[in-house]
Amino acid sequence: MTLQSPDERRDDDKKGSSTSAESVAFLLLAGVAVGLGVGAGIDWLVDKFPLFTAIGVFAGFALALYAVYLETK
Image 1 (tube, one colour):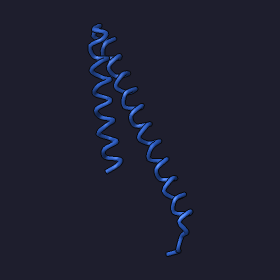
Image 2: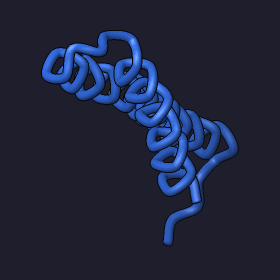
Image 3: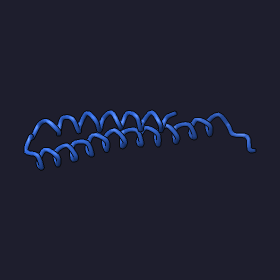
Image 4: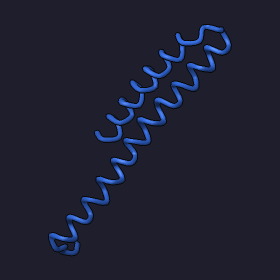
């Protein structure tokens, strides 16, 4: 175990928080994008355009929030 100065500890904290923030942003964006794509695909198949797209976006966002919860737990 090595002793670190307070400046080195702050640098380590910043690295961890930026990685965490990037992963949270990616999870949210990816969840909405996947939900949008799946919903639009189902709408294209059944020809009911806005219904499943909206459901897919909300479901993707909800699953992304759950993934963020698991990531930060």
